[in-house]
Image (cartoon, rainbow over all chains, first blue to last red; front, side, top):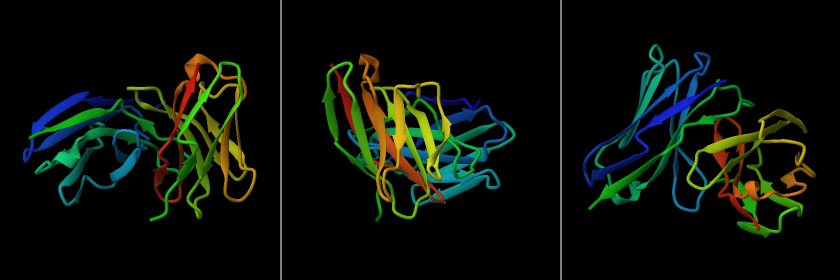
Length: 113
Length: 110
């Protein structure tokens, strides 16, 4: 089955700097890669996603890149702000509506003042 | 914005007791899921449900677990005889085009 590895487990960046979180996946049939942000005491919130027919997608300060050949995908947050502090999970799935999503172990992002 | 709602937010129970966790998925979604997250760990898939039957279940989802959609709006997870290791945050999720999660039920088994 699918296995998603995520690095780093903890990341601290100065406010205003960029943060990058990297993930790899094992199942070459995976073709949908969502990213979730989880704040304390809340459920994971979808923040951005990318499908395998696209190499990059951007939404304001957040961007995702996908290298399907290498089975790598990354989340980039620019101009970080205090409210970006949270745990971020990458995930992978084959993209069928009834398919389970496999999550990485998460990255705890701290934005330092 | 439509959201997945879960009740209760916290549930404390004694080992061996039955618990039912409740969820109201987003109204036009057809696919429903339960995931769980043990403190500090990743979110793990438990079960998916479509067309009034289980589509897929993980190894965690043993005979002590069951799911039901008793009416047109609710989706429930039942744990028949809780164990200490069932203590976790349980998330309900539903999908149309994309997967959305509820805020979770924190289950504590004493």
